[in-house]
Amino acid sequence: MRIMGLDYGDVRIGIAVSDLTGMIAQSVGVISGRDEEKRMAELDSYIKEYNPSEIVLGYPLNMNGTKGERAEKSELFRDVLVEKYGIKVVLWDERLSSMAAHRTLEEAGISGKKRTGKVDPLAAAFILQGYLDSKGF
Image (cartoon, rainbow, N blue to C red):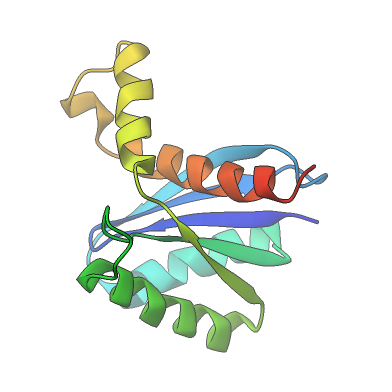
């Protein structure tokens, strides 16, 4: 039972998956670019490779808990995923996940420019791990 985590953005989609027990999240990749058709084709490859039973999609609420433009884009993306793949998609509060990813990379000695393409999959892993932890495994 694998679960996939996505950190959805306008330019990059970070991807993480759980182990088969559904306990541990790990970053597996990033999809870059603005061409939605190409991004979806690449996401298809990840879906086929990992065959998740559900997807956890980062839900970027404002710090006060309200929805903004990014949250609305995530809701639309959720609808696309449900329609295309026919699997459960859970919106998961992602506040501070990118900040935690930046901090983790900084602590690992990875400087600003070298973080490009690394923050999003790590943020996806933080999002997914939060969801997995909430399940009580």
